Length: 216
Image 1 (cartoon, rainbow, N blue to C red):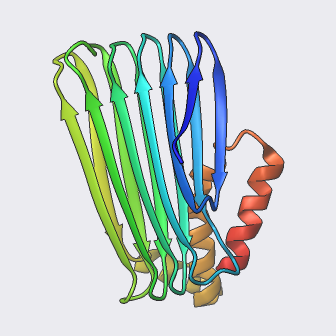
Image 2: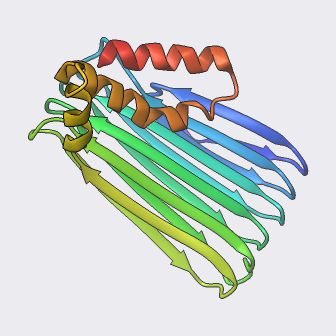
């Protein structure tokens, strides 16, 4: 089911989606509105959980700000598939997406990010990053960033990386008496912290940290 929201002129709103199985939202922003969206895949008990999430944002007036943060910690046979569409239809807007996934066991994830800056959207800033860590050879992550720019006076970038934990950091921590398992957990918790800190509710921040700690 497609859900619609309109952020009216000057409105600020934060939306948090945790383990929504089939999320499909279309959000329209009017002038000088600010939107922050968090999408989290963090099921501790459902080892075969599957999530299909779509988020579409249309900036339809000047001065809009859009932030999207995603966290995925997948294990066993879990699957999470996230599609974001951010459309800069008018100039003078800003968008930023930071999406982080960690996959273990036979889990699978995908991210497709469609970022579009239309001809009338001059003086737009738009950024998108997707960073992923694979903890097993069976885990799979598919990343498809798509950046379409039809305006000249813009600042825009996108990037995606998929790899393993930093072996040098693990070695450094073990040399200081920290076990390999503990070191790995600390590094993974630190990996997610940037996105967790963007949650406005400090109690919710702590709940997310605790959930990640238990899964790891």
